[in-house]
Image 1: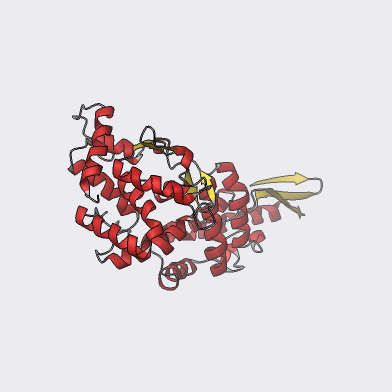
Image 2: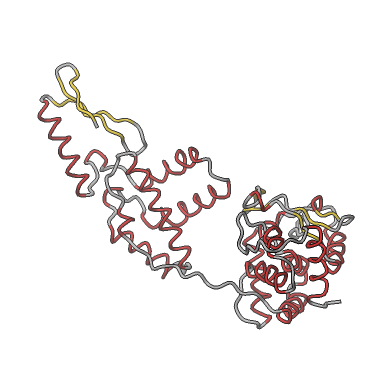
Length: 356
């Protein structure tokens, strides 16, 4: 803020909620401008918004976050879409047209309870959405539109990460058998997930141009978020898989079934599957029917990596196959060449489940 004389009056300059410089003028005396300035400082110490911002709403803050801040940060498309969805479908419907300076600690606590009890979200999602709300409000603290971020006063319960589960070979066989009965069209994707450890978005985005039958390999070039193709999660996620002979047989049959579709695992229209539909309509019915307990789609990746390590494939190779940007399992004592290790991957996968 600054105070200056303009002709016969005094003015105070400050930054509003949109990040623009705002000028409050018309103070006949310097003392009046100083009183205004002093009041703003008091408001800051008490966490109260400047009275000039009383008409500004959380929606204004969300608009700034979506239309300006995210553009400045140059976030990935899928991140922008997720933020937009949470803001428009969850945050704004809950808070309505609430004035930004009137949002209290209790309001935020009620929002947390709403996420847990009404929307039945996981602890991880609750924390993620709370962080997003805090980030939206924090931008306005930076813009000097408000002086305190009440979200920081609210503490969610600590998120306890569930230990990843690796299915046993017997459980994988039962999963495959169940899938063939319950959702036979899902079987090629499920088998590919188990035999490659590919992420759900990578499977959905996989195209035939990236499947090389001649050289027995799959090249991961894309991932998917909702209806959009995007780059994989990290640079190291651009990687190559050896196709074991058992999976090659499945994929060749799938190539005939998909006809002219460019996608390896298309929907009934030959288009790219939505990731949520894969989980809700395909994976969940199979998991619930196979009777081997709770596990997630992501656990199929863990099953892949665990199966390789426990059968002698060195962890450095497994790290590359998983597409991790940093070493999750690092044992530098392994000195086998990648070519030899990749060949062993195919041998292990061919012998692991003995389906044929």
